[in-house]
Image (cartoon, rainbow, N blue to C red; front, side):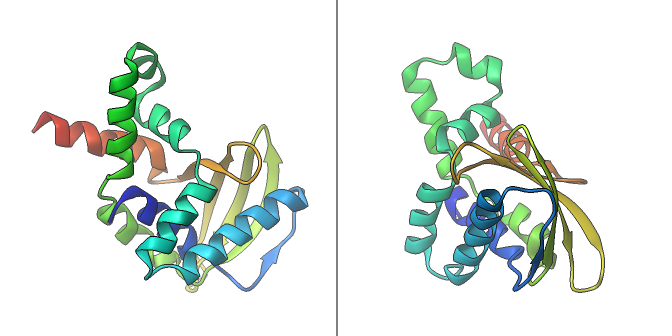
Length: 166
């Protein structure tokens, strides 16, 4: 599964028919819920997932964060392009399996500050998990952080480095 597929599957895992409003802008709530619903509908359609990835995710920001900001600054344009391709082709199967237990969860929005929307995902079994959506301006995501997993971009960066060292 490529990164674009994984990211939308991850968003789709949280889809819910209900979300409780907190002090989060209506535009952010609409964006997050829209991405969640679109991802869940497209889960079995790789072409649609790829187009949703283009729509909802800040590709260069994700590549930069997964490479490490200082490393990114030292990269040539050719190396940056290679990193963009590595992120695009990242096999996120292990991470997607970890998030599968969030399917059908409800979202409670908590707050929004400095481009980050914090919410609680309430799983079907009642477990509550804090999620932070890192917004990139408009309706784009730069990262998604979950306690116990950390930022999605850090996970991607570790996995890419591990594969490169083999």
